[in-house]
Length: 168
Image (cartoon, rainbow, N blue to C red; front, side, top):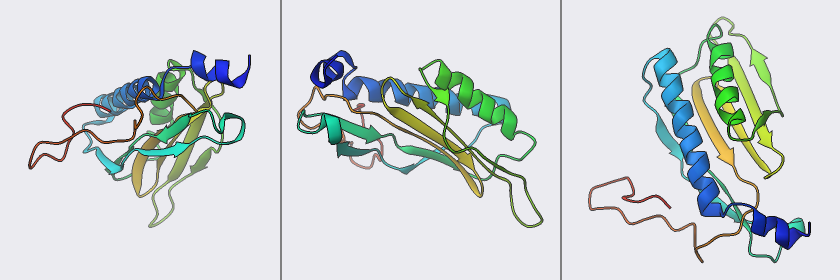
């Protein structure tokens, strides 16, 4: 399959972001269910980039989801369960565990440092999930064609509302 046909066969950037946003919501909800409610917040907003290399000049873009985080560490004893929750949910969305895997137990005065990640090699996406002082998760898409000329524009917010009224 040529590169242009490969891009055309993929979901649009808007569709894949919607899928990944739902996947991240499922992860946050499941962690809250298993370990008690957490105060998740958007530590970093969604970011965008133009694709280069074999996808350069074809109008393809990629994006990184908002980085979702909560203050505090997932303790060493519950990290394997948290990692498995993320692995199970992301596997249902086409990801396989891969990449950097860190499992450094807590030491006096220091929390455990743990990180896992995964890839969807078919779509070129990846995720990272980690805990140390705080806990965070983020997904980066592969290259996809947009259906909107400017998919990176944030929706309008109501006065005094920090959250968009519609999804991008």
